[in-house]
Image (cartoon, rainbow, N blue to C red; front, side, top):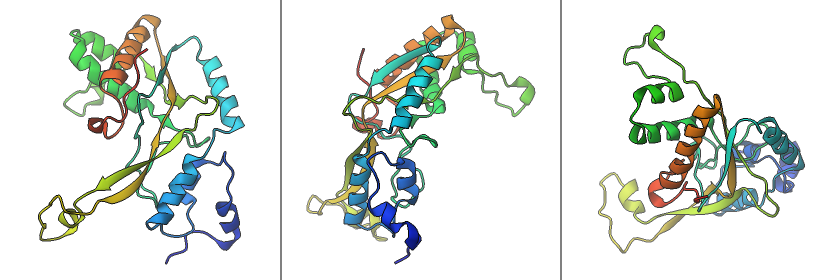
Length: 245
């Protein structure tokens, strides 16, 4: 078994506080390669984490700094998978703030959702080009136009008693079918194999910066997109959708 940590830090990992940095625990918080129950127990520890006082202060400062920008606060109807394919020892991930370790929805994902909604709901191509920029077929820098808005990362909202992370399970029913070279047939008699995952719950604070008339339009696209299309992974299974206002 490969040891992933120095002996001098093992005691810290075995008793980390409830406001520890989740990003560090996901990538560097294991003492050895996770197997079965050990992986599940590690995810359970992360699911017990609370937002730190430092994050609460940073979040309040961010809200105060963006009070004059277009913003909205949306609550997940269920749970969110975001950044699930990120490389780490757990083989399951979640996108978190590099500084604070709390969940975020990257601004690129927010912009992508709005752009997808605009392509179906807005008939004015010039408006879409101003909101999101263009995508020239040729790689000619002279033809590239940047959008007129800035889509910031969405911050997780720290609320009393709420925890950002939650344990999930994806069950593989046909292990022999997926793993065998001969592709053994999948049947209803196969034993399910639970695979521990980590997801996000709660609310997020979204900010779009730019001209007020255009940001109002972008916020409307965002809110309806979050409710009707969702964001992140596994949306076909009901993840990543937000409640209506």
